[in-house]
Image 1: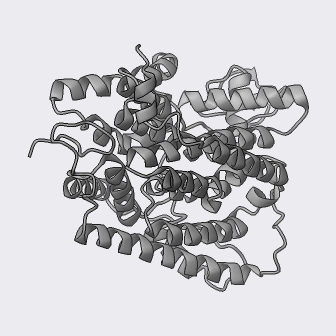
Image 2: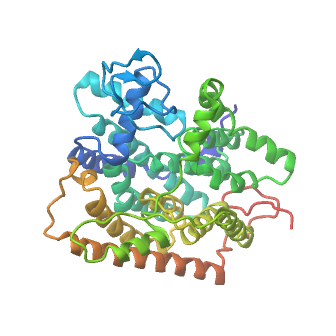
Image 3: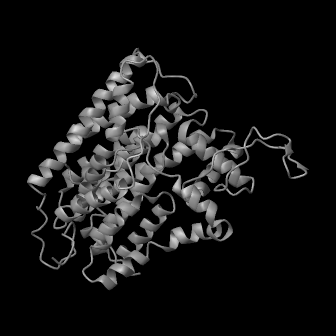
Amino acid sequence: MQFSILNLQSAGFLRPPFWCSFVIALVVRFACAWVSHGQPVADVDSFWQWANRFDAGDNPYSLPPSIHDSADAPGSGASVVFERPVFTVQANYPPLWIHFCWACLKLSEWTGLSFDLFIKLLVSLFDAATTVVVGYLAVACEANASEARKAAFFYAVNPATILVASFHAQNDPVVIGLVAWASWLVLARPFRQAPEVGMLLVGASLAIKPIALLYLPVLVLQVPEWSRRVAWGGFSLPPPLFFWMPYLLHSPTEVIDALRSYRGVPDFGYIGIYNSWNNLGLGSAGIPVDYDLGRAYWPFCVFVLGLAWWRFRKVGLVEQLVAITLALYLVYGRLAAQYLVWIIPFAAALRSPQLRRVTVYSALALLAFYQLHHPGILSGAPSDRVPMGIRISQWSGIFLFAHVMLYIYWFRWMVDWLKSPPYRHRTQREGSMGPCSPSLVSE
């Protein structure tokens, strides 16, 4: 692997100083993680249970024994004695994330600090590192030094990403950060094998959560020949295969069943808006209701995402990633809260003016959602809400308002781009694979 200082400089790696924004992001996120840490709640509770099952030598993808099982196992002629706590949550995330959770568990046991704190610090660290690549992507997308620093700082203090990373501690900021680094390596090519390293990062993200499947086709289409596309895509396979193989060989059925149980939840999206309307004015949070939209729902979503890519196939890579994410937000009705941060690093690198209002309403909607449905995410205690002088019935109104406004601005953003696609990077020399150049897709 040959590194070139000139290539690193032209890619923006040595200029300008995005590390200042990284330090700011790290301090802010670590402070929020410390303030909000406590008992494992919501998703962190699941991570904690997976880590404990893995630490005990259990298969985290198998169905765990019920905590209500009697001491006598019916029909087995044997007694079942639980000599340790029974963890009842079946894992449905890829194995690399379970290894991260196990590392946080061991750090918790070694230091005496809570597991919740370490998982929040871990996600916060990855999210803070994304601040740097946002600046690099901005440089790759023809921003000057001042614009790139502003883009990095915007991400460093973005309230929506802080809420998801440092309070919720979901792993989406980790995965999206790896995809952002991979995108920069593909675009800027600071060294000869940078695209291949980028695809390995995509593979690492797939070993944590399969979000990158949404973006993998766009990344591999950045090269003209199908043979090279297949080779690029192949570099994303070793990391997930390495971590999945032991479980697939040992218990393939359980792994497949566990993975099939993973899907978005109707926190946001049009189903989330319907739930918010039903809960409006209630004295409690209400219960999110899911709906079976039929067998044609998934093919329809894939079809719409394909149309979005086809419409924006001639623009730069980062613009394509933003457009596909917007299409997902609009067509998929089961958006989990953490999905809201997927678009932020890419749109921040583009300095998209629409992102400012989207960020405001995303942060407000997330805050209201956590206060309504998972107050322990903010307070660190399962049932305690952070006192803000706002009643639950009022939070339900705030959530509905922010939710609807967020959907409206997503829609307006997509309409604006459909009317006037962001073709500003098409001035690149045809056949160039320079920063933010259009993908070389034959028409």
